[in-house]
Length: 283
Image 1 (tube, rainbow, N blue to C red):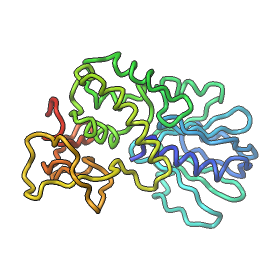
Image 2 (spheres, rainbow, N blue to C red):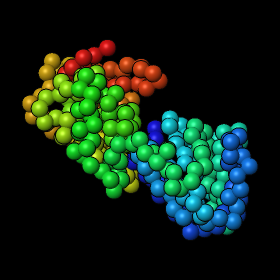
Image 3 (cartoon, rainbow, N blue to C red):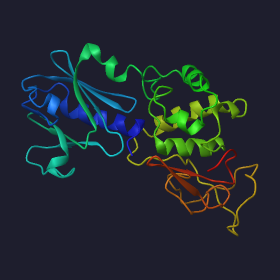
Image 4 (spheres, helix red, strand yellow):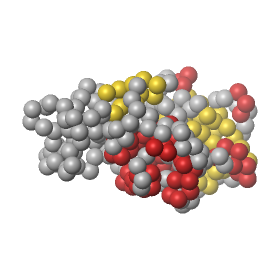
């Protein structure tokens, strides 16, 4: 699932393949921009802004794309077979002498004037992986709606940019609160620590091929019985580490206490949590 760390990696791959090279072919397969001719222009850079991609092109143009749930950009060498999906899912093709970048299933693809990029990304909060990262501003924006559930608030890119559903679930687990607890009900000091942890996790995963939020998984009780309360001290680490604490682990034992992980489906975004380790409202 593309989140801030994944999008940053995609931007780096596209930048390495396209930046500083002249486009020999460009095909934007969306009706509004289908006749746009970018051939002969040099790609200047490719930048990530939260979960958005900005491909800046000579002549003051920016190709703005967003991956959302299952969009992807793939880079191919000349003559290499394209393997990102069937042809009807292709939304963009950018070719130079050395590489071809193909955008699949892109729900957002638009050509903007570079000096008007704010129309696409100006609403975003501080970028967790960007030069504008400001934890104090992120905390202030989250606190502006104290009655809003913390999980929902973390997903709102206007508060802080880069968190998706995986990080939402993992961050709430690490904070030991359910995603439905209102922001204003968080214990004192938890919100700033949660924002700082979000930054550390995304930064730690910015170059990893497989996302992980578990530095060291914790051993569950030998009996496998649910623990009524979270343990007061960390338990000895497992030798075999799992990449995530709760996301995608429904019915499997919590790595901290052994209680089966639960799942709630909400607007096509499943939420995972441990009912023993995390306090607060539950569905």
